[in-house]
Every structure is written in structure tokens, then in C-alpha cells.
Image (tube, rainbow, N blue to C red; front, side, top):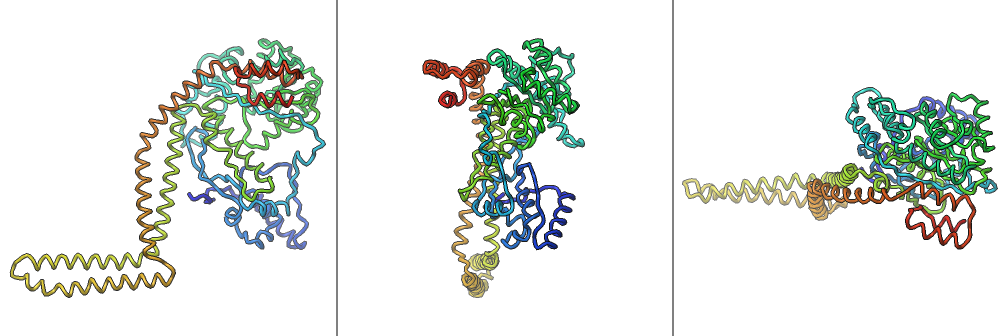
Length: 572
């Protein structure tokens, strides 16, 4: 597809949306374009059609006056798309047109601000919030997790009703714990086995244990949209293995009534409850910020808005701490890759759309290449993704050249038709000339026919010249077309050669990625997230600022991989 081809940007028609649009147009028609006001507490999502849809509700006439008669002209004016790679729920590579940058941004912002008054945190500077640190913990799968993912993919059947959604759900569950796989058929694990043989849960509990040791009064939130039925196991482990008292753990799910939620909220903020395990029920209407230092994201929501809501439980005014950590617990080579990619895409688009100043806003800093290298570590998967990406880009470029060539050749059709007559006449002349030289009794006769055949050739050549002159009067240069056609043919041949070489390229990439994977595993063996957490707790929450302490910490930094550590120390 071309860079700004938006044909794949589609959404299902909404009956409510159509009714709302009709009602809005009727009201404006009866009130001189006025009397329609829309209110929303939700930012734009990752669907670019929403920009056009919202504007069309309240400013359809203005859009038409500006020349945006349909969504295509609107997109072409303000947005550019790349045919970008996404990893689908099954882990396969798919390509779709994604908006990567906004162009004519000053005009775009002018159009938005004329009808939409967007307010965010920056519009309320008096609200003092703690610093927010996003921490990504990339946790290797164990043997049981890999086994369950293999079984999940082997049993996937796209023909079954709801198969994709079921696959997504099960993949997300396995990323939490392999015991949640529908294909796990061994004996029921104990609570200790359930946690400690689930890499993501084990790492989360280890970090909580370190926090309890270093900052015992801190509040910690464990969030998951899934596996709500397993929350009691998390609570039991926190009590029996970490050392919390039963009354220090609170669970909030959809079945928790309002009074219970308020009690848990108040006890958490007072410090009586140290850990809250929450489902989607804590996204809205809950104030859990007063003592909170950490939020552990066991699962990622589907949209950026929900993520902001979860973060907002702790990252808001009234928190006693200067810093809040949002801990993304990611299982390597899992559905977490798909979820994180979606979230980052939505976040980038929302933030960049709201910027002002630059006329072209590039949001390509959130790239699948970065996601692939930072999270997807399986050599086979990485090599397949890379080759698929290269292949699609080559095929896309080839199709573009073929389309351009077809467009040019349509203008050249008349010339080609007449040139074909010249070629046929020359073939006939050569055939008769051969007869005239074969030495038989009819040779002399055929020789007398040659001038007639030559006249036919000359006639068609004259027709060729006439067609060329007619095209020239229309501004079409045949010589340039011929040169362009030859160049295009050479380029297509070059691209075909690259496609033929892809199997060899894949072998080279696979060998490279296997070496990188081995090096990464070796490095991770020596990486201790818990030790990093211990040192981070000292820096962020003990308010130690002496020069000697900072020097000591900076020397230790070399061995602990603490992200942005020097910046944190300087800020403290």
C-alpha cells in the first residue's frame, strides 16, 4: 500500500452513532448551527476515524466548507499512514495501515480547538502529583509456560466460533500463570507451587517482599483484569510466605460491595491495609494514593484510557511519597507483547495529536522494531518477524512500481499498438525476403513483392510518429515514458532478486539472534531485580542525600542495571 492509503482504516457502523449524528444535524439546522454540546471524560483512542466522527457531529458544515467532504480527504490532509507490522493475538505477523504522523498540524489543531476544548493534567498546575516511574520487568518463561503456549498454539482452530477471542484470553492467562492454561491437566498445585512456578507471579511477590523489608509502611497495589478467582491464592501467599497479617491484605473485585470497597480504601490509606489486590473494579471511583509506592500490572488493559485510570489510583495528588512506580510485569515471548504494543500505539497517538507548534508530528518513535528487540527474544520469532517485514516492504515497493508502470503504459497504449503493427510488418518483410533468396523458381517473384512490404513498414512507422506527435501535444513525452518503463522493469527485477534471497537472509538472522539470545540469558542470570529494588528503595524512599552515599550508590550502579539511576540520584 501507499504511504497514505487509508482503505484499511475502518470501523463497524454504529446505529447509535448514526442516530446521534442525525439528531445533531437536525438540532443545528433548526438553531443556526448551534445548541449541540458534547461532554466526555475519555481521550481519543487509537482509531483516527474518531477525530473525523466527533468533528462531524458538531462541525459537519464547517468540514464541508473547508473541503473535507468525506473521511478520505480529511485523512489525506492531516494524517500519514505506514503499512506497519503488528503481532496478532496468535503471535503471527499482520500488516495494517497505522497513522504514524500528523501533518499540517497547525491547521489540524486550529480545527480541533475551534470546536473541542481539551483539558488535561497540565491545565491544573496546582495539583501536585508524585513523580511516576514506569518499570518494565521482562521475565523469562519457564519450561511449563513454554509447554502450555505450545499446546495452545497447536490446538488453535480459526474456523471455530470465537476462536480468536478465546485464544487471546487463554494466552493472557498463561502469561500470568501456566496453571491457568486450559490444557494443563496435571494435579492441582499448592498455593506455594502456583506462585513460585509462575515466573510473573514469583517476580511480583519477590519485589513486594523487598518493599516490605525496606519500606514496611508503603502501600502496594496488585492489578489484574483476569484470574480474579485466583486472588485468594495471592493473598494466602502474601500471608504465609511474605509475612503479612490477614487484615493487611484487601481484595477488591466486581463482587465487592460499595461499603466493603470504602472500608478497604480507607484502611489502605490509613496504613492498616498494606496490599490491595484489585480487578477492573478499582479503575474508577477509588482513592488509593495516600501511601502507595507501587502498582504491579499483571495484565495490561486493552486501551490507553484504562491504563491511565489504573495509574491514577496511585499517581494523583495526596500521595505522601515523592515517587510512584508503575511496574509492568511482562512475560517474554507472550501475549504481553501484543498488549503492550497496542497500548503504546494508542498513547503515542493521543499525546502527539495534542501537541502544538510543529507542522508535522512524527510519532514513529514507537516502532515495532523497538518492541521486537526489547521484548520478543525468541530467535525463531524474531527472524520470522524480520523476514516477514522485509518481504512485505519489498512486495509493497514492487506493487507500487507495477501500479506506476501500468498507469504510464495506459498513456502509451496507442504507441504500443502501432509499434506492434511495425513489428508484424517487419516480420512479414523478413519472411518474403527469405523466399526471394532461396534460389527456387519463385524467388524472382518474391523479390518483386519486397517494395510493397517495405511500404507497409514505412506506413506504420509514419503512424507511430503521428501518434507520438499527438501525445506530445497533450504533454506526454514518449521518450521519457520509454526510459521510465525500462527503469521500472530493472527495479522490479532487482526486487524479485531480493525476494529470492530471503531464505538465506533468514538463516543469517536466525544465527545472529541465537547468539544474542544466549548472551541475553547469560546476562539475565546475573541480573537481580530484587537487588535493584533494594537499592532503588534506598534512593527513592529514604531521603538519603549525602555526597558519600551518592558516590557509593553510583559505584554500585555498574552491577545492578538500574534504569536512569544517575538521573534519579541527581533529582533527589
